[in-house]
Length: 201
Image (cartoon, rainbow, N blue to C red):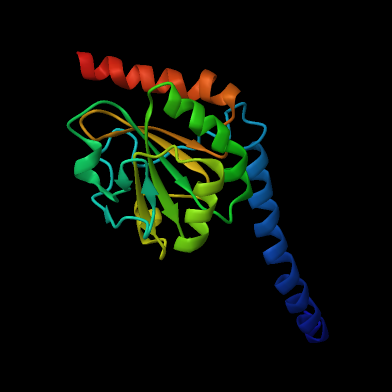
């Protein structure tokens, strides 16, 4: 016969142990799973459901008040990502410290001829203008996404993130985290060249 007095204590243990087991399973998957820290894969190259598919059909307004040497900087839509060469879309925000760290690399990419479009994610327009005014403007266009809705459509995990878009407007590659000169050279540029080669076929 089961001692009914043990039932409350067993229930309390279950309430504690079940969430603990779920957390431990998550930790094991994060560290040792197919995309985990010990999997041997690059955590910056997270898989994206968009790879090989057309870029999201979003139309983002210009970042209010942002101007370049030639006048106001426009926003962008999917149409601006196709019909030309390879485009890099960079998701950034003024409140994002790693975005500040990667900015010199973006400026160098621009100087080398890479076309870069900015997606300003969940930001205040004035803060974003001040951010770009102080660090430089690497972007040909900047779309404002204050609500984060476009970020969801792009599958953004966090900022910064960088996408390589082929000449026909398809997502070819996604890099998560801040770009440095080394990762731009070893990871981003080969993907840009690969996208250019596909367009030439």
